Image (cartoon, rainbow, N blue to C red; front, top):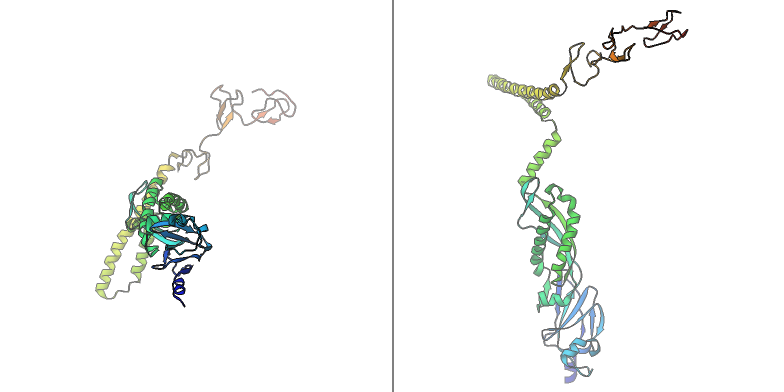
Length: 382
């Protein structure tokens, strides 16, 4: 091989990169002290972009596909090199492969609690965590703003900054939403979508596109959650008096099972039994008073005129004796004024009230309110 062949073999003829690390964002192709041959083959795979940098300035950006490097398809670099004629002279350039795939399962979480004002609990501290994903959407902006001339760049280099940026936006979002802490779980999807839109412009400033953001959990401090659990337990128990009775009965059963021996054991058992009896008496008497009080206040408001039982004021019949509490009304046989059904004389006209009317002509008994005999048709006079 001659001297010319030796130098010719030093020119880079195939430029490509196979990603071996899922977190690598940028890889600089090794062309140090080597020149790229004009007409060399550039292979850019899907989810990649190749950035050519000449003397610190971005020359060209190539998308996925197979490219042959000529002056015709490298207009920016041709202008920078002042090639007025398309001859195949070698050139020097740094080649950066940028990974444009999605970087998924990136985690965010609160390092310090978020202070919030809750309408039910007052001032609370909120913690949360979740995941997000993003990709490089503008390789040129990404090179200018972040990785510069580094030989390699991965997600760990920008992870902390992106996480703090997300937390800042979500903290503002949670405070503005004014959603009560107990209802936050109902709005995970809505808050995630709003958080993604809020982060869009911030990620775009670095050449990124945020593709998803999810809230996995929002939680309160441990002591607040314990207080909420106690409150929930009280709601589940319902009647606390009945629960106290149940506890007292359980304690009595456990005491009965205690197989103490000797006089000392007997004395201790008697003392415990007396104390337990006092506790149970207080529980049952207190519960009985609590249950009896509402009954007396709500239902015992009047007295039955027949059996003197205490009944509700609006009762029409007595639940004890079954008699009508309020007298029934019937029209007077003479003036049709409403009077008590058991009245013997009308308080309006003084007419005597009889159980039936007898026809003087035919002797037929008619109803008390009949005006004419149902048998002969004779006029029934009072």
